[in-house]
Image 1 (cartoon, rainbow, N blue to C red):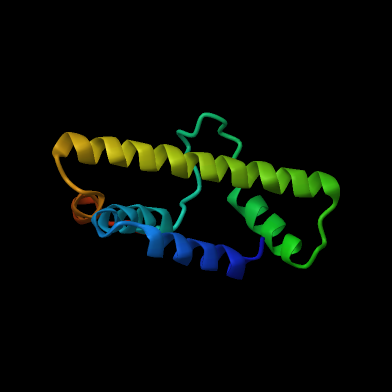
Image 2: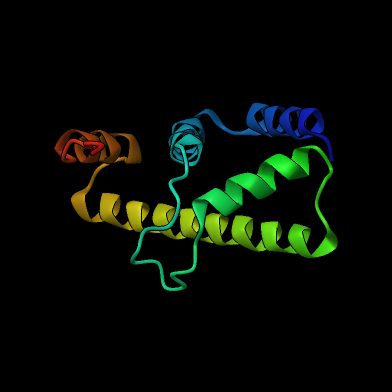
Length: 119
């Protein structure tokens, strides 16, 4: 299914939703739209290589991957998607515990995060 087809399907589904569920869907989409950061050093597998992932992604765009490299890229992307799903689940649980919606929780977390400095 092409990207355009997926977007059209998503829009059709949004049009079918009751108004009362739109806010929850928008919150979910906002969380999913956040950039994915690569797994940290605390990631269970510990073998994540950001440079390798970027190389595989770029070469995939140019159809320059061997079958083994394509499988490696799929494994990286699957791991990132799993991390994103686990993060979303944890955020939803935390929001529920704090009696907040996801947008409010996200604003709290962003405002309380320490600044990031590059050496």
